[in-house]
Image 1 (cartoon, rainbow, N blue to C red):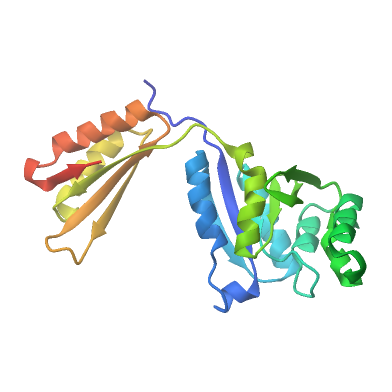
Image 2 (cartoon, rainbow, N blue to C red; image 1 turned 90 degrees about the vertical axis):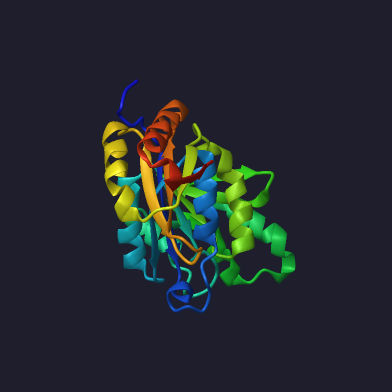
Length: 248
């Protein structure tokens, strides 16, 4: 069995909004998407929170798009002055913002006679955008290159992500947890040895406090279930018997 890690799909989340940076609202969308991507087998590499600024959006999205397989943006899509995500993403890829006929049709059908001219801003997307439709929502999810553009309102964000969710399903991650009654310093050398001998497995060490005796949670994770089991057995074999509380 190779010690090299297999190719894993990667992702980044870009949360856009002055309201998040100022503390007016707590971000819910990145938290939700972190769990969703892990369940789908996608490795999240970066979460960034940036202001409603066209240049900031363009630079951040451009860099993320080049760095990972999938980029998800949250927020900044709507009819008001601070909804700048479409303009920023268009600038990131050097294309204009255009009005999409299908989105305009959907807006006219939804609002009817109550349609305000500014509502039609929600029909504007970067030129060349692909629209993904699904049963979870009547509103499509725009995609530009490897960037998926999602709204900021949490309930709508989740509904829109369901439209595209299965596009990202990959082989799952396998996880084992070793609960130890010890201080990190006393098991650090054992962890080093297991890390060195099982390069395909990601091993994390997390001290826990306020629960009586010092304790550490060690996690072992990889796409290869057998590699995780072997690393877990190697770790447990190295640790003092009294230090291992349980293995999950």
